[in-house]
Image (cartoon, rainbow, N blue to C red):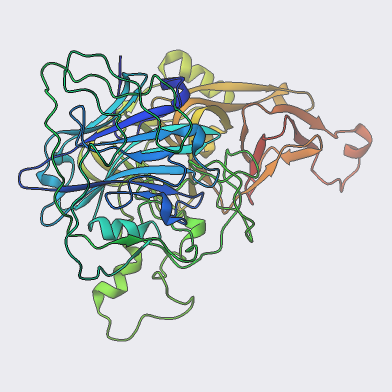
Length: 549
């Protein structure tokens, strides 16, 4: 039975199917509209560094045929064949997109979907409708992305501009199309490989035949037979596209976040909070090329999201503006306010600047628990209610100092959160865990499990320390005083208990006491008598802020 995804949902491909030879079907239609459905093969920086991996109507397959465009079949407007174990190591993301060819916008489309079929059986489907969009002319529908293993994400993000603008966003170039006789797209029978289901709807799904010069694929790969209620349409020649010919860049452009135009290169910040050291934060999870410094901890470039605060121009500085340079005289009010505009939507959690975080409650379909009084602005229909911890929870919170006064945010709208100008960091958990003091938690997804965790030790008041442990799949917003530092856990890692912000839940924490009677009997001792020692396997981390509580 196929799993139904909502926008923003993600899953490992291995959790959906054991196969790697996959059929991807896309359905999108609107009255009087024609669509270009394409697949972008992007590198670790989410850029189209090799134009041969832009698979579209003029280039229906990648060089090694790991990505093939098959055409309309089995009720799908367009279909692709993706062989994951043949994709080159330099390709870290496959982005499936649709754009309007000619006039029209995405609000005019009817119900559509993207689905994955393995072994003749549909394993996942993400559905969308035109009511979710407005004037956008392109749509990023779904992604395969590499983060340790291949995963699938339901994106559903609208994009202003058509296919040419989408290509530029991924770092490609648009070549002017020379005058030439119109060339029709080859018919299905001679163009795409003969993988389409037979005309008889009742016949079983056939195996995929091997391309002319490629090893034979897994026999089970095929689109499922068309249900009786939806008879497959007769193959039709696709209309001649009016869009210009697309070519890739001659040189690799600078990295830009997914869904935003390329920005001038910015100075990166510290490594990704919660990520294994040496890995790229976000979906890729791969070792990035050498850089002056890694990306800011805790931030993952999300769909349609501006780069995290450590990678974007300083707050109050317009993109491309030289630091310290004032806007041109006479630019007007709009130009003066341009640097402070709201960051584009498209992700559930989006930092607006270092001290302000926005959550889109309409994405993900789950409530958010936030610290009471942290809402500074909201848009749309949002309900706020008191979230009690119960009698037992209040007793535990009061006894351990880990009590959180929370409110529950539900509805369809955007809520902006902040508190006392603290720096905010969105930490996405995908089945792993993190320990954070309740004092440093601003908000988190209700889907996360959280509990008070005790740290045993001697030589400190009460004989123990306490912290909050978060586990599961979701995002927790951590606040810090200033820009924190993330350090890997080694056998000789010690931290002041008043400065520590968070650490990976797999780390072993030991109270390290240097209290001696002789030292305390005389004035002038250092005061650094109780610390936390951390131990753990490679990949564990601690986060320390430049401030003591």
